[in-house]
Length: 234
Image 1 (cartoon, one colour):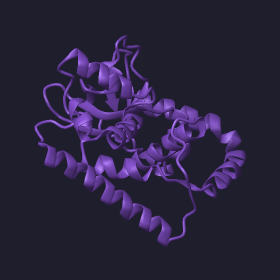
Image 2: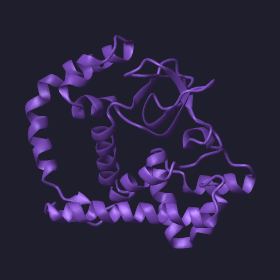
Image 3: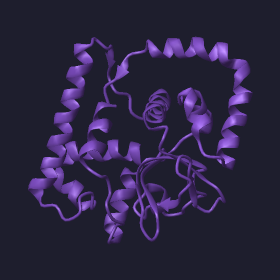
């Protein structure tokens, strides 16, 4: 996941809705069912295979010239190289990427939840009004989120992890992926739930934690084995 880590640090993802039917179709071809983070990986692969002008046609960069588009990608490559060098220096085992496999999908979700557990929101009414767990702000998915741009939008994901929260007239979340609350309870540090402001979401997570308490011993042995697995070079 070195690429994903470097890319969200150097480029903001889609910055506007598609402006034409052609652009919308191109975007849909790269959108991933798991959310924006996986879509970013697919955008990068398309960029590498077809060049920066293909990414520009997708509206991936707004108001940037070709030089700046290339600069964003070059910065992502540089950050990825630095992360890889660090992983090799501390002798972390590496494995080749297997993007799209069920194991890779689950590992990516675990990596996101482990690092961004403070950036989680829950749909409180089933219509896309998300309550941020840590701040109790209400926000909607941004208009360029992959869950909003699907041709036949399904019900919004109940729980999401977001990368950016923008406070405006219509508060919005960007770079969003669906997560499972069970994974949040399992991977977030112990202090996380106890420090959340009172809410229905916190109560639901506490109920999940109590229900998972009986299987703690088994999950610890499983987690120890997973920790020894190689790091995936995404």
